[in-house]
Image (cartoon, rainbow, N blue to C red; front, top):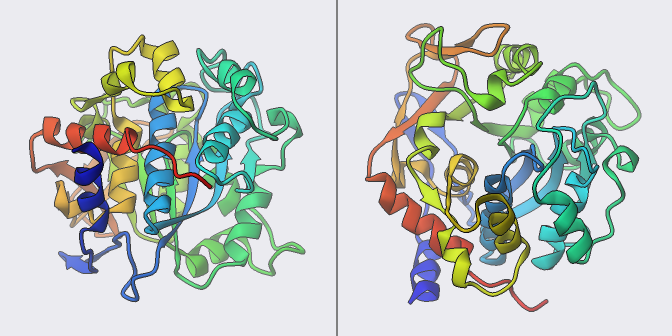
Length: 337
């Protein structure tokens, strides 16, 4: 029954639409081609990052997504974020997906409850984080190789990689600087972060944790394509992962076991992945006509004017129903490659 439900979910038709003048980028192009996704994650911080990458891999198995690259944007005390990403992609038959890591000043969750265990217990070939290619190089190589306006960037962590990408100069990879490269190649940024409509005292971890604020402010202010914000309030009431208690062994099951003891977890990151993979209007309403204003400490507030191509998700169907969709996706077994 679970597999039948997911098969139906993955096969639902998707089209392009316009909401209040803002182009809603959906999961399948007008030609029925898969969405090209770059996944940017603080993989060491929370098992819901693992779940988001599982959503992408299952959508890729269904032919709806192509995972172009994965980037880690937080420091991991065990230097095992890249290995964890590689473990998951290898488990789903994508061991050659490019991976890059953030090499800047240290910040982030520090010691992860699960990345070292996944590194040690599952097959992978990734090196320690500080020996992996830099995230900006992977971004530039990946974007330069894609058709114009064809890439969805899905960010579910800190925005340091994105800020440094925007600040990157022309190089041997591309004659374009970072802003020009993003403007030419990226269709939209789907961003898990903020709290909407928000206020000056609203903090959210991805935007304001530690030294993240300046990266957040710079990225949101300078990103040259549409941004869809999936705020804290969207994923918080959606609990997923309890289903792993009786599931076969997998990297995701192990991560949820170590992080939550199968008690479930709010679904901030997998909801953002769902919004990137599917037409988000299937599950949420989309608020437009304004923009997200971010202060230097990472607090955010929705401001009514001007319209800058920003939008954010608002509740449409009961959160528990979205949770059932996500749990069903998480239980889809990997294909035999």
